[in-house]
View: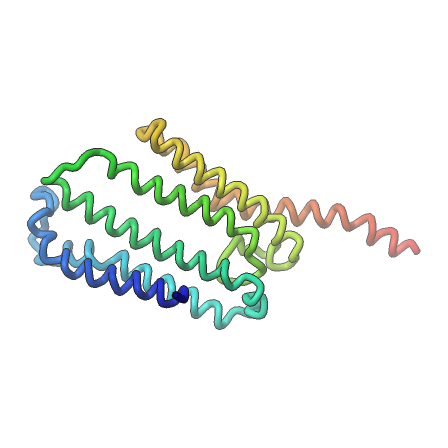
Length: 224
């Protein structure tokens, strides 16, 4: 099965199941959260995340077609498709977990379901960490800063370190979910900040180090 068939199949199944669940949501919606504005809250709950997953796929497909570095996609096509698969699975998985948690408010089946979201995120981070070093310079996904896109060596080193970090982040997140779930924000918060801000900063540091290491060679070349 191709990646496209897999993704669109998952999305089609999500929309079908969400449509069926849509008619049952009013029976499970907590009274304190019910709105007098008709079915809008149930429509929002049933279809927002599947629609978001579809939009993510279409946006990244469009970016890939227009990317000035699209010639590089041949080198990491499988990794690119894997990241799109992970994005769809994470979004759809989160969607059904939210609906599931809502619908079992009256039929309690245990606290284990509260551990599933962070476990799912952690597993996806582990897979993404393994795949991240295989990405090549592109404008659609990865750690895309002016320094990584300017220098292939900086790109490779940044994504290698970033892969180790995401792997460790995901592994810690899964472990901490079952060690101390109430303190999960002590892992999730700093990890998200380091991913969003630390990895771009890392690319700048690596770029500066690369410039310093190459500058003596340039000076010697000028003297000769």
